[in-house]
Length: 470
Image 1 (tube, helix red, strand yellow):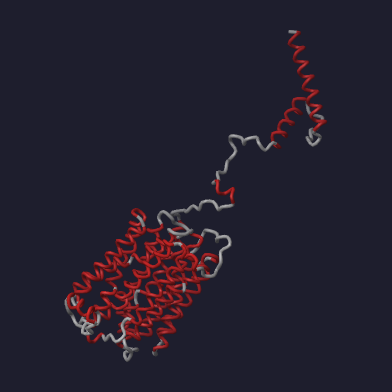
Image 2: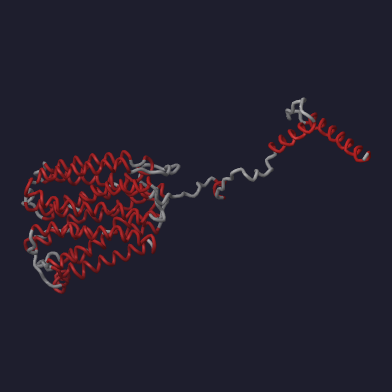
């Protein structure tokens, strides 16, 4: 017993000497003198452990896992909600904006047919076609500048400015009586307004979805198809009852309500890319995949806008009633509703580019297999409208998803806007496609006659070159 007590006393004496020595060598350890020896010893151990950077964290303390690239200054991996209330509200806002913007675009066939019979009856189809070609060119071409601004500043002021242009433009159309009036109101104001709404509406979805982006973009893009169903039928019913001015003003009021929702709901969530610019950058075409994708979309749009722009006039020229020529455009857009939603969902499962190729092939089949032979057949025109509408609807819903697969979401606006600026060049060419093409001379013939006319430049069937070129 005595030996054990002596041993403990010796140990305590050694600990006291070690403690006093530690306090003398490290005066920064502020230990009050009134504490007991054990308390002072514990305090010193805690102070030393807290100042030692090699001590591992406690088991219950939270840890933050970062990628190795963070230590080199690279931004961490971006995550996406892939849903949630805010994400789906953005989709709803984009749907509302596209319902107005692309609803207007999908009614250009109705306006073209009406103006050729009334206000602009003395102008050639080629001259009238330029009104809508300039509109489409601006609707897609202005994205060259709008895209980078969207990436840096967000969608708020862009969508607001587009809403003003679109509503004021439609009010101006209602009062237009001369050719240059329609150029100013429909082509310039309408085209610029469509572009200011369209680019942010598509780009905002890329901030909330990645894995499900095709389905979300397709769902929002159906707004344009619904507009293409509702507005042509509404105008067909309103023109005889209210007249052209009042009918178009009512359309402007509908646009105002729809665009109010777009302004409230469209927003982004990712910060702008560090060092980004608001100016266009054509150096992105050094990416070979992006350059080839842009070239492919260029030819797709070049061909698709031929039937979209002139299907009503084609039906009228082949003896179809005026009422059905308006309804035909609505039938085409009805097929486009499913053509924008379904391929987007399929693209998320089987690949965005794979699905795009399949829908373009279906467009080719519908144009050469049906439209080439349909003439004035009501049943044939209905089948062509549904099939072509379904196949062509994917160009709006899948193109932004394919482009977004090639770039970061923070620069999506720049890439997508630049791509469609090149595409718009093919759209503006449509105004010159109908030079010396008189709709009153159209006839119904067989596919062989059409091919012969195309190869021999025979003008007895002037739609031959248009259909085969499409």
